[in-house]
Length: 250
Image (cartoon, rainbow, N blue to C red; front, side, top):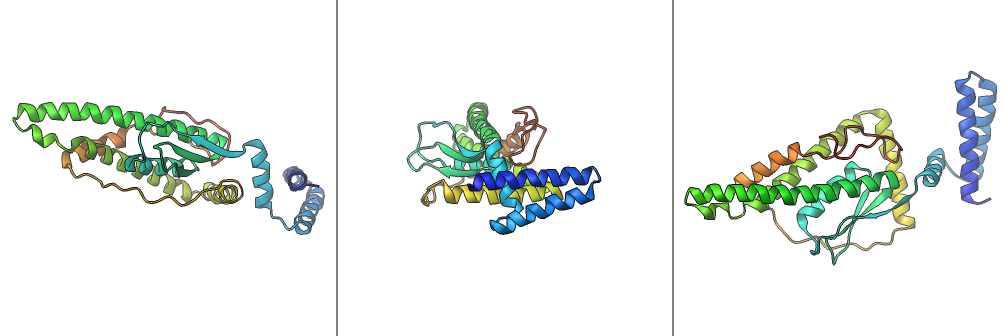
């Protein structure tokens, strides 16, 4: 039998053991559980590997690609990309000659991560230009148009930092829940294995760049980042099929 066949067999036996236990049939449950343990020992596996193999069949790991905005690597986009990746249970990779990012994860996770990232980049570009135009004309009317210099870059920086802070806060809240915390550990194991076995990468150099320091631009951007829609209101465990509303909640 192949590893796939073995893990599938163990998964079926484990499901039967749980079903019997739920029905109160402790004798049959114990028999199925013993067979599960026998196979795990024989093939030097554990239930985590079995569960991962089952999920690999239902919702396989893979790669998703963001838009390419025709630029080389951009610091704020990669910072945003990392925040989105962690929030949606993915790993982010860069392409050294492009602004395109690669998300590695399960189909249900990487699909929404790519969508959210593209949406947020478009929103940042749109809102930062709109805010800059408004601020520039305010400064023009005041006779100090030079004070608008650096506003847009700082707006973008503040926006990205705010979004990253929101995602970090939500992840910490999820980690407090025992069930979700266990799912995160389970998912990390699965994605690490996929990266080791399938994805061939080399270490990319750190991207050059610096955060700008226009105070008003930064605070305006941060306020916008705290209010932008970053995902739907329904959050499910990594890799779990379920409602994932896009753009429908803050």
